[in-house]
Amino acid sequence: MVWKVFSTFFPKQITKTSLLLSILFLTCLSTKFLLASEKISETYTEAKSFYLQRNYTSSLSLFLKLTQSADDSLKAKACNGVGLSYLNLKAYDSAIYYLEQSFDIRRSMADSAGMANTLLNMGNVYLRKGWYQVAARKYQNTLDDYEQQLSNHRKASLYNNLSLSLMYQANYSKAFEVLTKALDLARESGQKSTIANCWMNMGNVYEKLPNVQMAIIAYDSAKTIYDQIGDSVSMMQAWYNHVKIRATNKGNINYTLKQYDSIEQFLIKKNVQSSLFKLYNARADLLNEIGNLQASIAYRYKAIHLPNVLDDENALAKIQLAHTLLIEKQPTKAEELLEEVKEQIYQSDNLKLLCDYYEAQMYLSQNKKLTDSILKYTRKYFQSKLQLTELSAEEKFRELVTDRQLDLREQQLIKLTAKNEFIQQENLRMQQLTLLLVISIILALLALLAGWSSFRKQLFINRQKQKIVQTELKAIEAEKKKLETDLELKIRENITETIRLADRNQLVNTIKVKLEQLNRSKHLDESQQKLLTDLLNEMKHLPFEKAMKAFEVQYNQVNPHFKEKLLHSHDKLTEYDIILASSLALGMNNPQLADLLQINTESLRKAKYRLKRKLKLDPETDLSNYLKLLNNK
Image (tube, rainbow, N blue to C red):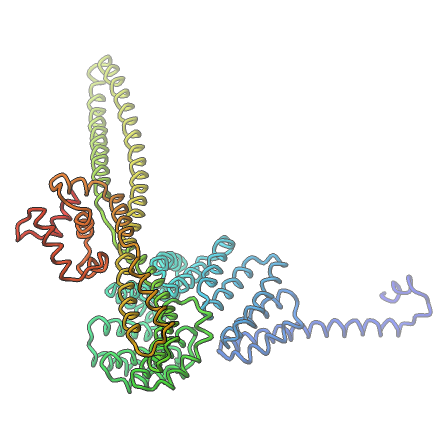
């Protein structure tokens, strides 16, 4: 049959043998193609298996082969696999290169889910590299551009990673907000491992804020869930965090060291080197606190020779070791460690890491009596410390909340709610009246008609009143939220400026003392002494009065009637007295007041005594409580 069809279209010179040979050739070709496709699929499965077994070198080799021979769909997956393998081998630039190739292929295929996954992996690379701002942007862009394509589980992981990048930037309040979203999404998706991871990171954030009790609760929640899903390694990591923070809180050294011993044995048995890295560093910190520096150095050396996921943590361990070595008069070894981390430090945007590095370099320069280096690193240290202090101040003011104006709105809401309940009771009484009217129908039809008409009219009026009250309730709710936002913003600005002024004054005084000590040093030449003298003169002319005026203006914006109430009863107060009274009403303690006003403790005591006399208060009356009560009237 095949021969008849074939001979119809081709010359008779073509024999049956030629036809059979052609069919055989095509069959072999198609078989070869199928075998090749099957082999490529098997290679990808094998590469993925190697990656899951953490054999990243073998997975990288196989993924690289697939990038040369696979079709677009598999090639995109292979490039993604190459990028992840390079990530775990800490070849970050190569990882980004192949992940970008994967992203381009998936974009040409309009594979939105794949693009989102690749962007997430890019963010992980930048997170590991220590580029936390870039990582945060990648995560946020993924959430903004591909929210519809992402499952709740994937979004929870994204928010969780975003919180890590924010936490490493010391933006703890934002990290907490993001983690709350991650936890809600993880609960919706029912992924217990993700829920546990969120609780673990929540504990880290609480620990940084600091809120020790909430951190312990978060770590215990993570530990419980890890135990439920049978993840013994993560459960032990959560227990380690619990022990570490309790040691910081209570200082029970012997108990903590015993717990560290049992955790260390478990981690060595399981060969969890990244967790051992953290454990050895925590143990070194604890030994350093009790003065056992030799043991601290030994554990720190153990830590830095272990592999760890985050490069910033490795660098921090080396800097802390350099600090201890400088105390032990081993500057050569300390200098070698600082030189190892130098390149990484200047690429990181971790302010805490920069502060620790510059401080170590400052002490090293003092040890080697390098005057120029001391000046250089002292300036850099205090610049980065000032930036970190401003971030910390911003975090602190987010924790301070006042309910004064909110209480007023709550009372109004309670009154409206009571009014609504009264109307509902009226409706209930009207319903009871309905029953009476029904009975009245039996007695008299005319009376029923009149009563029914009156009832319908009253019922309509009551419903209209109820609608009006509900509308008013919604308006009050909206106005309350707006006032809450406005009040919170003003309070944040006021408290942030107050703390920033106090920290700034303290920092300026610290720098001034150190510069004066350095100016009295005999190791400075004439030009260096002139430079220090000029710096000291500049610091004497810092605009303290202008800063105090700015503080007074900001405080009056949040508490507009405080000054008026104060002067109403005590009209002989000076501007300085009003600033001191405002600071006390705000709840600042003596060290913060001394830093803010740039006076010593004795001068502060006298100033408070004079203010108390001007206010004509009894000796038994507490000045701060009196001013707080006056402010809240």
